[in-house]
Image (cartoon, rainbow, N blue to C red):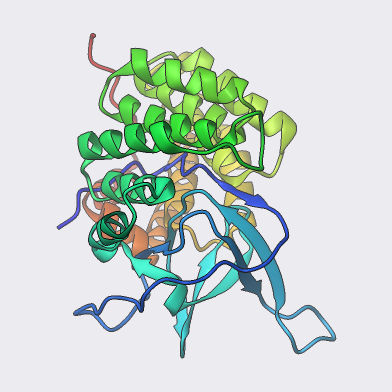
Length: 334
């Protein structure tokens, strides 16, 4: 049984739009006891590929549109499957179909990337992908060790900032350190990653400040991300969650929370359980408990989200049915 991670999952290094040739693929997908892929979390197999993913055909065309992404680390919850492909949502809500042979289920990912490192102990990105898998599987201390190795080996390459690969490692490690409560090291990593020009790092830093209880700084980081990219679904979601559930009334703003959460859900077609969960909390903050219950129940129809967060989500659902809002716990004294 895997440990649930943050619903908001600020992280993953993100995905950058680019163009280029496809990278080679690794071995076939390991077998799984559960034949259905729907609801599973999957990772790309190829470390630092330029990978082509596909969205549905545009009007007037029978061919899907090819999307190119440079992946430093990524993970998706599978929404649907058909024959040899699965459907996932990109970070901006774009529907993408990905061939199964390009993916490894999260449950098999640590073994998969460990084998890759046995084949090539200098494969920097295998450390990064394995670290991300360990984090998602509830092994944050082991994840930090892999990000340490990635940072030792990561080459300079194309992307944001003078050394985007270092920024990627710092952004990932900083998030995990924050979830471990090691805020000094976390903020140090994330500050450097922000200076290096890695956009997800600022979102991660906001989440770190939020966990630390520095809500004003968290809000400022989320606002800065949205100032540059108003339709960043994760930033909208995080900002909405803060405004809906903050234990400090000073930072709660139910109307703004509903606005931001609705937009995040619109961008992802009302199919991301974590975003719908935030929308439910926002509705509860403005005393619209009927809408809160409806949004929470819809969140639980997302099989990937339900697998990770069912117990907590059910508790929130019962709160809303009792016409009570949800509040996050204030941070413990350091």
